[in-house]
Amino acid sequence: MTEKTRKPFDLDLLEELESQKQSNVQRMRLHERLTIRTKVILQPANTTDAMRMKIQGLTCDLSLTGCRAVFPVGVMPGDVYRLIIELEDREIPLVFGRCLRCRMINDSAFEAAFSFFNRIEVDEERLRSGARGADATPLL
Image (cartoon, rainbow, N blue to C red; front, side):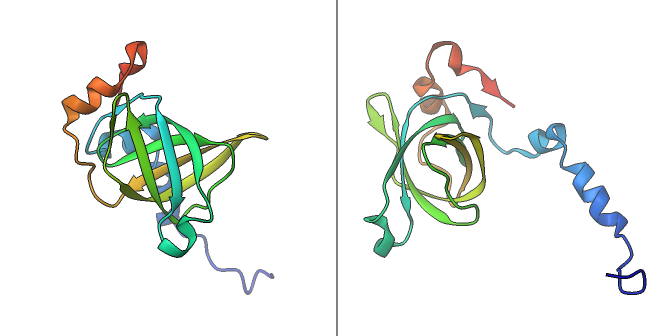
């Protein structure tokens, strides 16, 4: 690429990136996140592939519109998955979510963040009751 073919730098992109700081992202959240460690089963959303892959993981946090979880293998950002989340003695109805990001923690652990297509059908108090002990602190 030469100086003549290089496009000028777009300052709007830089401003957008700066607006994505943690404090701004937290203010934009619609629902508080609770630190909840519970079992989650992940499968591809489409029926054809659902039986080919089934991964068990552990949630890091959970809100009515999304979650973070740790899995033994990486999942693909942008792909849609079905998530079965179990809280103590109850199971949250089947949830479909898009993987927003996936990062490697170590060779056998990957953290993935999901945005649900619909709010989960559990009231926030019931969700809080699924949080355990000191892990029940809200994340804003």
